[in-house]
Image 1 (cartoon, rainbow, N blue to C red):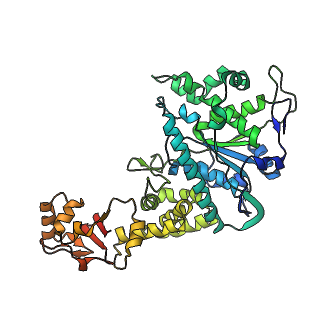
Image 2 (cartoon, rainbow, N blue to C red; image 1 turned 90 degrees about the horizontal axis):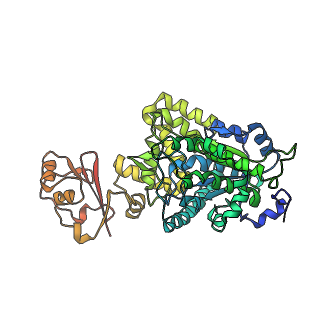
Image 3 (tube, rainbow, N blue to C red; image 1 turned 45 degrees about the horizontal axis):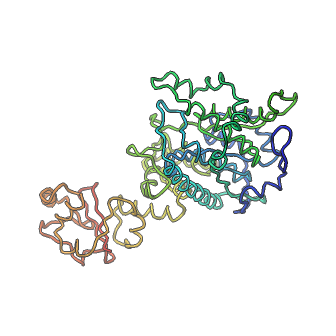
Length: 479
């Protein structure tokens, strides 16, 4: 490998195998629709730079594509599904994908889409988040590949594993002089000031710091570095990243010329950008929030049951759009499902399919099984054949589950257990509930305020379901 006069490495395709793990997971898939056409149909694209040229390059040879992930949190959330799935559609067609975690840029903070400056995060926090996100991204694409194998016919083209990168690897040792010569020389201040994200902050009361102002240069340098090291030609980002993506494309092309020289005539412009839409619900709310909290792809933060329920609660106005975006169902399959759904929307068949598809994509087949069981237990009250170990897995992380020593609950009055586990406000409230036949043990009304929990009440020898009315439930499981 050598550096050309333009400063770009000439990399032979066979040389690239030394740069990332090319562990072959499976063959690529046979898809009838063209890649960009499919992304547009699914609503995964807001804008594309030079779409005709990009289409030609994709048809000509496999491309390398990257998307940046901000390490301000330790886990991916459902808002990440749009760019991650956009990347996945490239992967399943045999292109190389690079999820790039901003271990360096996360220490600064991206001003895009923000009205105030983000507080600086501690080095230890970012380092921890990067490690967690690396594991989360790897797990996501492994499960997504298993999901795809069951739904798409395979071709003979091999698929490479994601090449997860951290920009701290090349930014931590970058000195100021090198940065100014490589990036600063090619960057026009007037262009930087004109970026929408910068203009929005300049007009705000707080303004913008020099640190945030230079963020776009660091992101541009990321694109240039990935282009030089891995032959990366496409960057995917949210619609608020358009200016940063353009900055990277401009840097790649200006860096083709030596300092002080002019670009040669007839040089083909390199680099492409794809932005994904800012996703909102039909009611105008930001997608991905449940009771004000971000719905995580990590079951330690959002239980599989709550994840499943989030998609199950999708409105009729949103469910068809989400089926296209978040699953690999074809447009014909989605249209057929929605036609059936329109005839009897009360069955929520489309929402159930959406919840099962996305849960399998993110949590695998076992995750769907656990979510179904939890739904049966909590909403359909189908508890007669419940098995303790299955219930413990299905309700893991759910606040209705209480794992107790036998000494804590056996022979305890049911009204006391109702108050202890929060399904009534007090013992007296539980007594009143018994009087109105509103307290249930294993779906049977409790008729005696003095009734205690006995071993004979336990399902599978370890389970008891204590319920107040139709909403509040405590699942008691003996250790």
